[in-house]
Length: 354
Image (cartoon, rainbow, N blue to C red; front, side, top):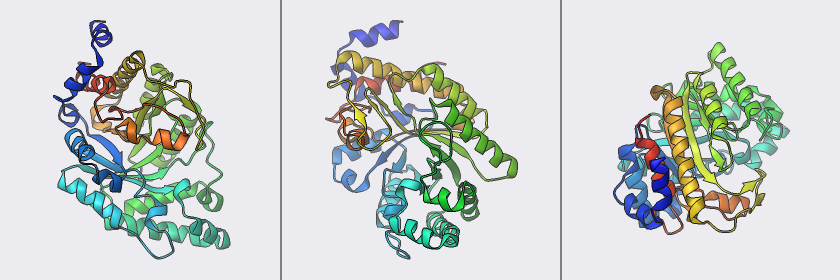
């Protein structure tokens, strides 16, 4: 209660000065990461300085996806990945690979060729993963091997995917096996969204995980994207984290942000309930971030805590505004790259006694 009253009474400028004295990575018991778009990122010195100061894990936002890697058959584009890998090495950060297989990032030429020659797709899957993972073996610590293989809600496999259309659900298993064959030490994740609140979808993911474990499919972890709204009940998030942790696998909060408005999960599908961010909203978001970290720390056993990664760490550059065509303020830092109350709440979550 004292902490909550404190949050309500102090002015916003306190959080700015408070943030100047904290390095998130130094107070966290697990890795703290963020995604970046490497080309615009490296051009902004203040952004780079903040990233180096607060984070010790890094994920590429788009540069490591298939449509950027193999834009045409037989030609691989490694330059951007090499740039972000070198940045991670130089700054002693964990490099996380996002992602190998995702329906949305599959190039059109792959989809067209697979429909012309269905038998080719499995061969391509193995060749692509082998080429990719072998190039960065021992450098990329973990991978989102398959991303979003289930529908947005309800727990069915995603039908509008060339991978499912041609190979059925077996493409998921094969992707994990192919990646493990190349780099047996890499941590291999299945990654998805809405599983922190849609229990039907989570249960389907956990059924797949259970089946994989029984048959020796090399899956190491579950990635909760954790793109959440302020109105998602903590009790639901806690329940889903517990069920996932009970698998014994690594748990990664892999794309974390917290929004105020709503959307329909489709591009351009945002609905602005809130046009402006006020002090009350800032403080409520700070508490939500604190609660999320405390749930992660208290529910997921330490040996399964792969870490928390933010999908961008400032409101100016958030993907939410671009993708959903709406305004929102989901991150720890504001449009001017100053720490918000959310930063303070997250910091408290990292350091509070359980």
